[in-house]
Length: 386
Image (cartoon, rainbow, N blue to C red; front, side, top):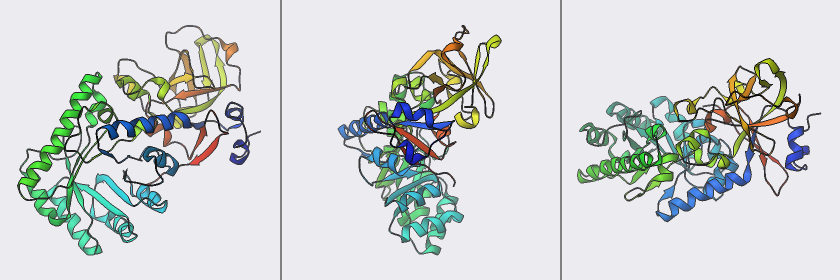
């Protein structure tokens, strides 16, 4: 019998796993707190503020854990996130996806509620459209200019003349500069990540400096990714760091050396639903609809398939991985192709799968089942949408 969330709250964590409908998203609360505390302490030693990116979390309890406080500055990637966190008392929110005019009414509505909203642009056209839309709504929404520090995605190189054109178009709505070193996810080792962190910082600081020299205020100098936040050696000239996946960690981060597999706080609980003895496969109900299609580790030194398979306590088992996945079926096999001990995994038994990409996996679920060593499980709601 599958029990309600209220009933599960009264059960010990290990026992409660047998009564959760699968697939389900599990969150190790103790690991979550350790990951969050470690990042706050690291950035605190560099005297730089943290503005957690909550696109992965989509949950007020996780955001509060990241900040170590009931509220504080946040980064979001959807306006649904901004509205949700504003409803929960957060009053300083950066919408870190290129701004377009049709989204201004929602941004303005938040600003009129007392939320310090800011947005980003990376072209003269976007800057002009933003100023016009803000004027129409009667709210002065600051915009940060997105700087391209690594050629990874969007933004303006700090040495491009059009940087000044964008600043001129924004006028008094210029709030500073920001960048995201997404290319850090492609680094081969931690030394490369540290070098990428230096490149990220220097690009943002240079952009701010040249703008100030031209008479344009650039108050915010915002950088961030989990790898560069973890291995950056200096944050001089930076006012804030944005990072998000560090709260959970995942196998891509482990492959980069950002964390150990034992630091990953997120997993998917799945049930063994079949044995394919001639193929040496276990079949679970955790397919790609639960794990996501993300295969981010495939381009790393160790390909983790669709995720590492663990026992009910979260400990990896004998080199087992989800080697393939259909919509509702996960195929589990040994990484080395060796024989499985089917007696160890009877039909109906439970396993946990560590995800490649926490963001993509968490997005498949409406709630976290939060496990702690010293407390009964809790259920934290998460949301979706744009």
